[in-house]
Picture 1 (cartoon, helix red, strand yellow):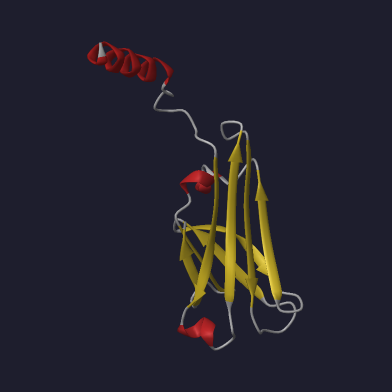
Picture 2: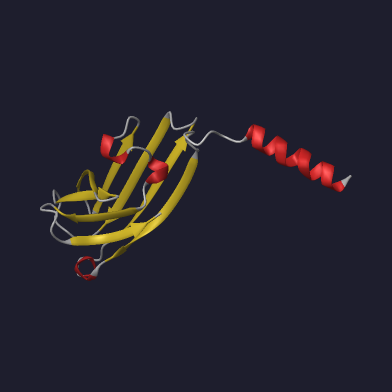
Length: 130
Protein backbone atom coordinates (compact mmCIF):
# COMPACT_ATOMS: atom_id res chain seq x y z
CA UNK A 1 0.00 0.00 0.00
CA UNK A 2 2.82 2.43 0.91
CA UNK A 3 4.51 1.75 -2.46
CA UNK A 4 1.27 2.44 -4.32
CA UNK A 5 0.86 5.76 -2.47
CA UNK A 6 4.43 6.79 -3.33
CA UNK A 7 3.88 5.92 -7.00
CA UNK A 8 0.62 7.89 -7.01
CA UNK A 9 2.30 10.96 -5.43
CA UNK A 10 5.21 10.78 -7.89
CA UNK A 11 2.79 10.65 -10.82
CA UNK A 12 0.75 13.52 -9.40
CA UNK A 13 3.82 15.69 -8.89
CA UNK A 14 5.03 14.92 -12.41
CA UNK A 15 1.66 15.83 -13.89
CA UNK A 16 1.50 19.12 -11.98
CA UNK A 17 5.10 20.18 -12.53
CA UNK A 18 5.76 23.38 -14.45
CA UNK A 19 7.27 23.01 -17.92
CA UNK A 20 11.00 23.78 -18.14
CA UNK A 21 10.40 27.10 -19.88
CA UNK A 22 7.94 28.40 -17.27
CA UNK A 23 9.00 31.51 -15.36
CA UNK A 24 8.87 31.24 -11.59
CA UNK A 25 7.73 34.05 -9.35
CA UNK A 26 10.34 35.38 -6.94
CA UNK A 27 11.00 37.98 -4.26
CA UNK A 28 14.63 38.56 -3.27
CA UNK A 29 16.52 41.18 -1.27
CA UNK A 30 20.24 41.62 -0.83
CA UNK A 31 22.71 44.01 0.73
CA UNK A 32 25.49 45.53 -1.34
CA UNK A 33 28.85 45.94 0.38
CA UNK A 34 31.39 48.68 -0.15
CA UNK A 35 34.63 47.94 -1.94
CA UNK A 36 37.77 49.66 -0.68
CA UNK A 37 36.96 52.61 -2.98
CA UNK A 38 33.40 52.63 -1.65
CA UNK A 39 34.55 52.63 1.97
CA UNK A 40 36.31 55.94 1.32
CA UNK A 41 32.90 57.53 0.62
CA UNK A 42 30.89 55.48 3.18
CA UNK A 43 29.01 53.62 0.43
CA UNK A 44 26.45 50.90 1.05
CA UNK A 45 23.33 49.75 -0.70
CA UNK A 46 20.54 47.26 -1.12
CA UNK A 47 18.67 45.70 -3.99
CA UNK A 48 15.27 44.10 -4.38
CA UNK A 49 13.74 42.07 -7.20
CA UNK A 50 10.21 40.82 -7.57
CA UNK A 51 8.44 38.88 -10.26
CA UNK A 52 4.79 37.90 -10.12
CA UNK A 53 2.25 36.35 -12.43
CA UNK A 54 4.82 34.25 -14.26
CA UNK A 55 7.09 37.20 -14.99
CA UNK A 56 4.43 39.48 -16.45
CA UNK A 57 5.09 42.02 -13.66
CA UNK A 58 8.73 42.52 -12.69
CA UNK A 59 10.59 45.12 -10.66
CA UNK A 60 14.28 45.67 -9.96
CA UNK A 61 14.95 48.31 -7.31
CA UNK A 62 18.36 49.44 -6.08
CA UNK A 63 19.30 52.07 -3.48
CA UNK A 64 22.74 53.39 -2.62
CA UNK A 65 23.80 55.72 0.17
CA UNK A 66 27.18 57.43 -0.06
CA UNK A 67 28.97 60.66 0.72
CA UNK A 68 29.34 62.35 -2.68
CA UNK A 69 28.15 65.70 -4.07
CA UNK A 70 24.57 66.05 -5.28
CA UNK A 71 24.30 65.29 -8.98
CA UNK A 72 26.99 62.59 -8.94
CA UNK A 73 26.23 59.99 -11.63
CA UNK A 74 26.72 56.26 -10.99
CA UNK A 75 26.41 53.24 -13.27
CA UNK A 76 24.56 50.06 -12.25
CA UNK A 77 25.49 46.65 -13.65
CA UNK A 78 23.63 43.36 -13.28
CA UNK A 79 25.01 40.03 -14.48
CA UNK A 80 27.77 41.91 -16.28
CA UNK A 81 25.40 44.08 -18.29
CA UNK A 82 24.57 47.79 -17.89
CA UNK A 83 21.27 48.09 -16.03
CA UNK A 84 20.92 51.83 -15.57
CA UNK A 85 22.17 55.10 -14.16
CA UNK A 86 21.69 56.65 -10.73
CA UNK A 87 21.90 60.35 -9.89
CA UNK A 88 22.73 61.00 -6.24
CA UNK A 89 20.81 63.62 -4.23
CA UNK A 90 21.30 64.24 -0.49
CA UNK A 91 23.59 61.24 -0.26
CA UNK A 92 21.09 58.77 -1.73
CA UNK A 93 20.45 57.40 -5.19
CA UNK A 94 17.81 54.97 -6.42
CA UNK A 95 17.04 53.09 -9.59
CA UNK A 96 13.76 51.37 -10.36
CA UNK A 97 13.20 49.23 -13.44
CA UNK A 98 9.76 47.81 -14.19
CA UNK A 99 8.45 45.46 -16.86
CA UNK A 100 9.49 45.36 -19.58
CA UNK A 101 13.11 45.19 -18.50
CA UNK A 102 16.05 45.97 -20.77
CA UNK A 103 16.69 42.98 -23.03
CA UNK A 104 20.10 42.30 -21.46
CA UNK A 105 18.48 41.63 -18.05
CA UNK A 106 15.87 39.19 -19.40
CA UNK A 107 14.18 38.28 -16.08
CA UNK A 108 14.72 39.66 -12.58
CA UNK A 109 14.68 36.18 -11.03
CA UNK A 110 17.87 35.44 -12.96
CA UNK A 111 19.85 38.46 -11.72
CA UNK A 112 22.89 37.32 -9.76
CA UNK A 113 25.73 39.75 -9.23
CA UNK A 114 25.08 43.50 -9.00
CA UNK A 115 27.62 46.31 -8.72
CA UNK A 116 27.63 50.09 -8.84
CA UNK A 117 30.49 52.10 -10.32
CA UNK A 118 31.50 55.68 -10.90
CA UNK A 119 30.09 57.39 -14.01
CA UNK A 120 32.92 56.10 -16.19
CA UNK A 121 32.34 52.50 -15.09
CA UNK A 122 35.96 52.13 -14.00
CA UNK A 123 35.77 52.12 -10.18
CA UNK A 124 33.42 49.72 -8.42
CA UNK A 125 31.94 51.28 -5.27
CA UNK A 126 29.53 48.60 -4.01
CA UNK A 127 29.01 44.97 -4.93
CA UNK A 128 26.68 42.10 -4.04
CA UNK A 129 24.69 39.11 -5.27
CA UNK A 130 21.24 37.62 -4.90
